[in-house]
Length: 279
Image 1 (cartoon, rainbow, N blue to C red):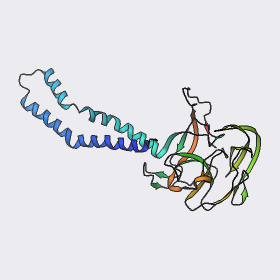
Image 2 (cartoon, rainbow, N blue to C red; image 1 turned 135 degrees about the vertical axis):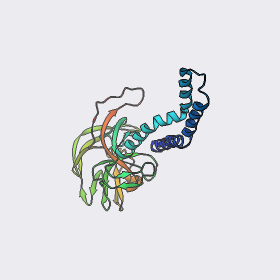
Image 3 (cartoon, rainbow, N blue to C red; image 1 turned 45 degrees about the horizontal axis):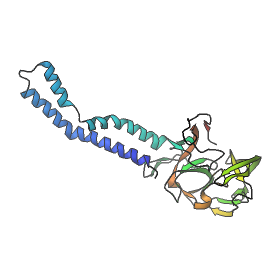
Image 4 (cartoon, rainbow, N blue to C red; image 1 turned 45 degrees about the vertical axis):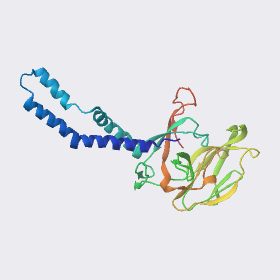
């Protein structure tokens, strides 16, 4: 089960803030009254040390209030940074190989496509729209979890994928053969090819399984208004808009901008050898 960290953060911020407010409006008043009552009735015959210790004990906040006040500003800062600026994300599958590998930790720019409220996702400020070729994190139509793919089609575009060739609005997307490779799949390594592809002025790498082992599709899609057509760079080993359709604008999370760490699955030490901007 995936954890909704935004919901957890919001809940913790609200909880800590509510305890702080409750203390400020009600509980603290009781402590101050106890201190005043002590000063009026309990000072005679007591040493300064006893008085100071007693006043300190009366002024002591309940432990849960003390923790709430300590954690609230930290949690609030993390919530703001994660919700409106930068959110970390780990690549869970190989659908974006060779651009992104399993175990890459990336940074997602949350304000690139507009500022949205955490949890509910309502956009409160427009900034820019996704452009062809950019790598985007989003929630797909069929599953409530983060996915990452490349923006292929914009609202109103016609996308065609035929015999491993990609066409946008009737024009063949520019590709250049690089080399023969082995493509890792669930049934083992299969022969394939590596290509350099350029979409929207962004050059990136894609890989394909040879015809004998790859998926063969010949399908056209017309992208509805307010939707985006997404594909993985691992073209024959990616679950994307070719299967579950275009992504609604309201389900956009942000723009993937950089790899900042990589960790192989299992008990392996993280490395920074793959640190790079994402094209």
